[in-house]
Length: 525
Image (cartoon, rainbow, N blue to C red; front, top):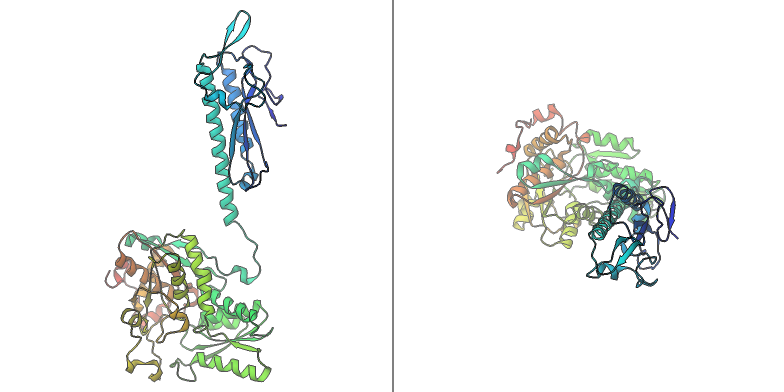
């Protein structure tokens, strides 16, 4: 049985009861909110609101009646707001008339709906013999009470649905149990860059990968590479992770190595920012710096790291070390195809028109573009290429480089840019997986000016590759026109670029000091 406390504090069960005072009444109509959990016919919860109807209710609608009705409506809402409503998938309302009625035609199997559907409602009139039931006479009072009952029931239903919707959102996006460093990587926020959006007329969003624990998008790649190596039995516990990196992947690998009980060796060019070297060493990894040379040179940082892994395996046995090989290892691509891409799609609710990012190893732009196009082939994907890189020519003209510029014949550093971690003169296995529609060129000055612009207008302290990505987003917005939704990547923050990209003295030496406060520095804007 269901009990509700009436306006005078007494409990009421089943039907109603008349007050002793003249003109007062007790609730007889019942509104049941019940629900079946999923497909089970299991009643989880009932909320009952009883509306007054004595055997023949008084025709006068006085203030006491109104106050009582408001009290019962409040009771309905209080019962409706219950946390367990979040478990509900649907609501079923049934409006029942109490079987204890003055109408002799109503039996205990009647749900009361037929009475309300009839063209002429029953009403009561007062005679010398007391209250008299007169079938066929429509009562304005009864119509008013019915409308009031329906309105209160609708309010209760709306309240239930609102609570269910809020708790469903809270449970979907609430705190999840995560473990260790691996649980902190990924699921980064997607933010709208207000200044760029207002200046271009497009909605420009950026995936804030700089909020990963290592401060870079490479955290995803490092974790994926190590997890797959452990899963496939390629490395023993306590083994050595070897990698050639411009710095960012090295930092991420050093962190993941510590979290998995392994060692780490990183070889990097000596023209990389010194902050990266210090961070890697602080994380307990070994660092070797070499001169920047062509990939065909044995002293290229990638070749040195590969050779180190081979030497350790020969000395300590197979599986004692692995060469992570971020450029050719497709775990890089999978980290973004299975992680970054789906996150962008979910966070944007599928409302994406274009994606753009620079390419170094090619894993980010390839993984994200492939996933987004798999969801919606109409989404366009572009790259922004820094000075010294040949990817622009490959995407736009189908030719990666001319014979005299072939990286295999060049014995010097092919890059002439202050940006780090992006740009390359060869196709990697990861980059080949991408699905691209076009490319843009970017310059060092555009990247420096963009970093200054974002700090001044949005308070975003970004690194060189992140600034270049935002340059690409603005150029893409100009190409596509107003009203488009564009997504890019904030690869890393500016804290690891203090000695070069964000160094006033260094920029002055390179004649790259910021000069403008608007987007006039974007070529062709």
